[in-house]
Length: 291
Image (cartoon, rainbow, N blue to C red):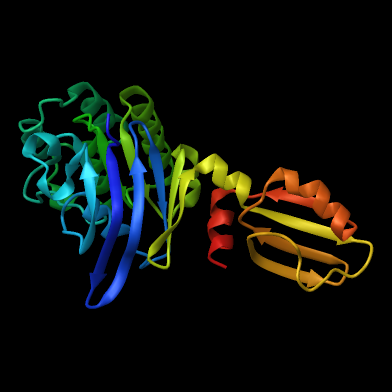
């Protein structure tokens, strides 16, 4: 089977300003991808281009083996999308919106829909225009989840949810990824949430993918080293991939992006120092890589 998503040398620009440059990545069935980047890094642009809402200036994106701008209606039924701004029909009630959506979705799971509406306390009879921002976000998520998509794209889906609702949503996300082998791309500024569910990371910086790969591999390679030496350390330390460093004579603290455990013993011997390796969580890694 081809990858669910295949991106080849993608380039996008707005008003002469390059937003995405030479992006190449792929996503397979069952991958849960945390899409990270600062505000303005191009996350929403990348997601919208994947969905075929815009045409790449250069390069190509394929969904299920088909160019993203050419996918047919039948293939679109296998995609779920939660945008930053919902596209709900405000004159309808949630019940009417769900009923309308169900008519166009042959794989609609009414049992899942009923369970989520109950557990998330969706007021089904109230007009959508009268719902709170959090309730509207929950309804958008239900619409995206309940037709059992093969590809689920979520652009800041939990920004307006309280901690309990976020935890419920993440639980559903994990269940769907495991049971249905859905491919999920999840963009959020709440990095701790993404770390709970993701097995892959795409990190956008300076219009390019600074990292595309497994979360566990990223956490093994980006660490912080705390060095305590017997004499003053050299100004330039012989460590590959230094992101940031602070010197205090015989002591130093530095974050690195190309760490391997096999480097520890020879580095301690070369510097005449004791080195403590601090493992970082995903949020700390994000901050260090943007230092």
